[in-house]
Image (cartoon, rainbow, N blue to C red):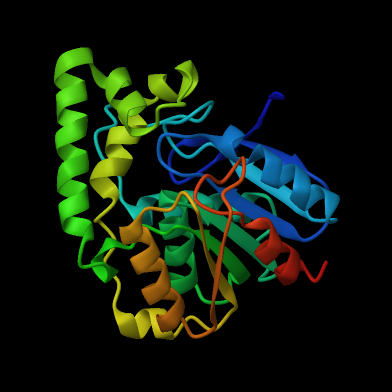
Length: 253
């Protein structure tokens, strides 16, 4: 991983990597991850002629975090993304954003709260849990799993329990992981607001997507003003689905 640039977010310093000089494509990673998780997609976007912008969300990788860092919200994460796009002169309305997991909620907030900022988006397995009847039970089970791992092995082990392939760098970002986990249900949005999103938005899942996220993805694609649903095989860089075909279509490539 190359040495990142440093950009001021909404009160924290964010580490970013850019490739290319074409149309901006912002890549927003999931919880228990960092910008490396979307590196294959960044390379693919660059190959399509886009300006790929990947960054570590607050508390992950090379980015900073408040002290103490005990919680976050989807809106706070979106404020970081807005600050980043502005600082990079990429907020002119032609940017596309790709969000994976928790990152998909961040992109959704940009679409809902700031119409005109993005020209389109790709959302990979968005955990918009209020759209799923089974999500509450799944979250309860996940919380019990994390509590047991935290009790038996500590916070880094809890991150590994969530994402077994997490490396040392991701496990070390356990404060950011727990802040994200607590923020999963922090986003207040109405169906009316989702219907008002007019730009094309692909909702993508794959063979590794759990049933409750398939349910939320189906529901979300049906609510968005120009929602488009894709389901296929999982690939490296986006474990719950492949965003590249959707990104290629949005770029007209």
